[in-house]
Image (tube, rainbow, N blue to C red; front, side, top):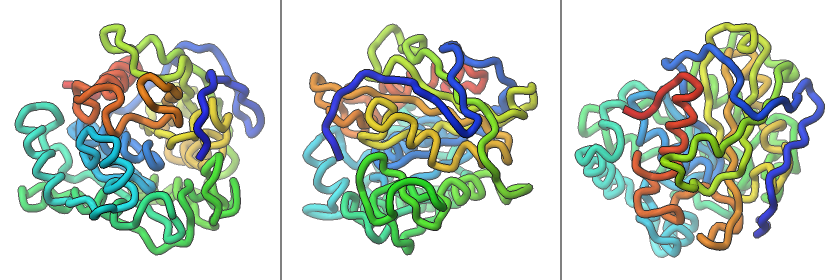
Length: 337
């Protein structure tokens, strides 16, 4: 992965996608059909959002991400145990206990909110960046809550041959390559698998995305004016049916490190497969964007899963999760209590 810092650029073209104004589009959204997905640090962010707002979400799709709370606020732990399983793999039981305590403190949603949710955790056998045991722990932490009577349908799929990438049917780099834009042509449609897990079997096959990709001003949702270390602009994909006033669900899709628009252009946003399936399922796809920085240290524009924005990064007090709650409320699907 490249360590770079660039200003965000929107240059949307092709496949029916167009950039428009920077305000949020006017939409009718269904608060009962909201979910989160992500790759790598984006998977960590998606799981943090799921735990923080589980009472408002229907589930999560995670590719090659560490389990909730794994880093414990320490970058060395993040780079060792939570990526390479060194000196040992994450302990799902310990992490579940930490989550229980955060729920008791009202730092995240009550764990009962996870009940009935659907989760798909993917990890490729060729992934040399994140160990299989790390990704497995992201699924196993959900299983720990069965002891509390909280049943989450969390599946782990680790038998496919792909690298540290977002696997697609036929878009992106060769599947065994872990490099920018971290979208791989693998003969496997992760977007389709995730959305079927979260929303059931599709009514038809997906075609080319026919909707619009619109930019919006992310600065408008700063919590109490605090910098969430995000880019100035994010993106939203709006299917034709959702633009026509039909009631649609929402998926928040979090990119990985070095996978934001400033680093890879629209490659992840345009080629991951979510947009064309969004047309089938009636889903708006929101693509929040981070920015790279050296103070605090985040040169790869990762989402915060180790604490560069503050000690509360994985809770409802964290600045990025509060920002997400502000955005979702503005869209008409409140996440925060």
